[in-house]
Length: 375
Ligand SMILES: Cc1cc2nc3c(=O)[nH]c(=O)nc-3n(C[C@H](O)[C@H](O)[C@H](O)COP(=O)(O)OP(=O)(O)OC[C@H]3O[C@@H](n4cnc5c(N)ncnc54)[C@H](O)[C@@H]3O)c2cc1C
Image (cartoon, rainbow, N blue to C red; front, side):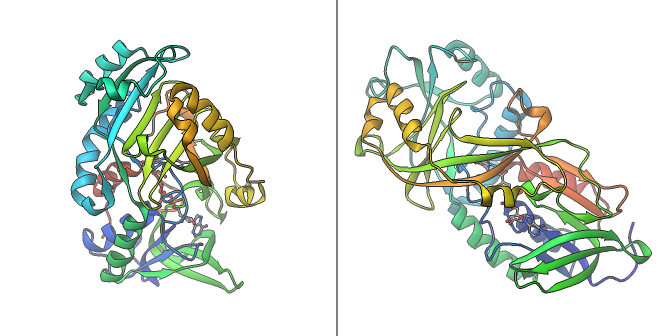
């Protein structure tokens, strides 16, 4: 374990939800006093932690991955308790099962929900009537919530300040080296081209899609990653569908969720949301790839397909689209599971990479941190 003096006790690279919560944890739970957080953007939680579907998962979404479903059931109540102000619960959430091309039938879905202990009720006739009966086998009311990323960002700013964590915005970490006497060296560069080298005892790489984009002695994560440019459309719902969240399972269908920070709904479609994908590798910078990509929206195609299942959606208005790189573990491509990646880099003692497949997984990451010798 690193013992010699360094500029910082810990450096956290990445000021998304994971990096922010981990920096607060290191200060509050582990008593580290000198912590720096390095973020390439001008604000916290402005990348994947904002550009997503804002669903606080409660298991329903994962009939093909029992572990992910089960962990969601455990983590959702913890998330709601810790960030009540950022959780939107006042909407009716429906899961509908498609008759064709679905990997799950309505009866299998009911059985799966029983197995994971997730509540579900048959939808009322009025709600059921919103769907096209030739295409939808059954509709259920479930308990699933949405989170407000802007409120989580506000929480992170306040907490990090209260803990004395020094945040360097518009600063990119570019290289990681083994330093003298067991320390780690991080090279940074600001958006104005100012370079610096900082040393630390512990380093947390919480850069999500940027996890493997470092020069120096950092090799790469042992777990393979897949990158995808994803489009989440933001739409204004017709007044008849305002208070709803809707997911059609389980195949080439769609999800509509309240997007609290904009007062709109987010729309993702399994066929149209993924624009481009590639195997992650050092040197293929996902952020640059997204910047260079033509952001041509597919919202029209999404809405046209959604309206086949829910004719009322013909009245929805597209407002905007969020484009972001989504990073998943290669091993979960088939089952859609979303475990965390938590790796200690043995060639760089004190250096960890952390990636959470979804927002509530933060507790799985913190549980892992509890097991580490950090002082
Ligand atoms: C399209 C999409 C839909 C999703 N839907 C959901 C959902 O509905 N529910 C759910 O729970 N989860 C969802 N997720 C997953 C969820 O968004 C992520 O699990 C979570 O936001 C990851 O948080 P993070 O802090 O690791 O990543 P980010 O928020 O991306 O934070 C990483 C930060 O690191 C910074 N950074 C990167 N490289 C460097 C560097 N070299 N130097 C300095 N800073 C750097 C970035 O600017 C960024 O701010 C979705 C993700 C996407 C992309």
